[in-house]
Image 1 (tube, rainbow, N blue to C red):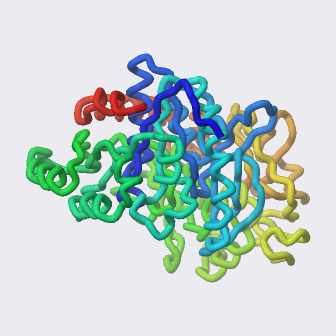
Image 2 (cartoon, rainbow, N blue to C red):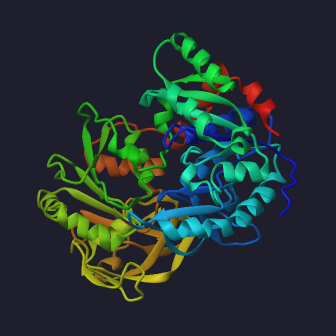
Length: 493
């Protein structure tokens, strides 16, 4: 397939996962946009249960991409498209994932089978790359994992497999905060085959703390081992924490607050999905969002418990019970606390979850019984951006749906929201428990303030979307100060 295109491309690959590629790509996209360029993000293959709804070329339907590419599209000032992330893997177990291509689910695959399937997906990746490149001056590409995983090089579509096929130069990103950055960059140089090594035009050091001149000798050492040029050392940027995170690993390292007015507890489900639903609450100065890991009980002093989305509702229901969180939720409600369920979390709050089509293994399991509803999992997935309204608080909302299932029962006669005028969700008779299929609900500032006011938070709140834009601008300015952006753009081809 031809890869002829209008746009130039540059790709950021990492020496490992979670080195900050997503944020750097977003910042570079915003910096390029600020320079007057038409720019688009691209990630050939992503693995995440944090998904967004994006446009499908030539279709009125929506499709799924990673939330990171949605954020990067926002940095570009461009509508999100499934071509920005043509292959998305949504983990359902430790060894298996749902495979989404061009926004649509094509089936499930275990890890070993997927390594074979990848060979057939390169055509889809290059098809999206070609379409995306036609309408841009620059495409900034994000790799996945590390090119040093040479055991996975055969049929690779995420890193050097894509870069060599599409002839896109690569900048290697190393994370100095985790230690061993000199060895990780030099070691990558050492083990890459010549074909892959020649694609690398330089490197970036990310997440530096302190005086960057202290790493001058480190830069000389890396240059001596690799011959690669440095595009800069990026100091740690506080504003980056305001941007949505894609990987659940960040939840395990989330910092605890210093005792603000309101505590919101969120059980860390094994297949937690779309956990950035909680980001607007985290941005509130009077709110502490506590992600509770397995083995710990839900805090008794929480004013609100949010049961988040899940990629595997039935399996995570078992996890809730295994950790005693079902008892904690019941006790929380008896104490007068409030509970909100989002998507899969909403399904768990009901009396029963049935899986007649075997989507999650089949059978039926008892829910938590906090809402008088029942859910049937169905094969057809709802994927769309929507406009909505809170029935409870009479405020406009906007968000998206990504779910399998239909929920019915007496409590749905008290809907939590209306989506495009149609009732959705359910509210308990006492009003203290409610759920909805709508994601992104807390991003509506006036609605969020009313919810928090019920919990005793009396502040004026924050403008969440404006905060994201300000963080992207700050990130772009940060890169302009510390990175040779001119050199990066010149290296694109």
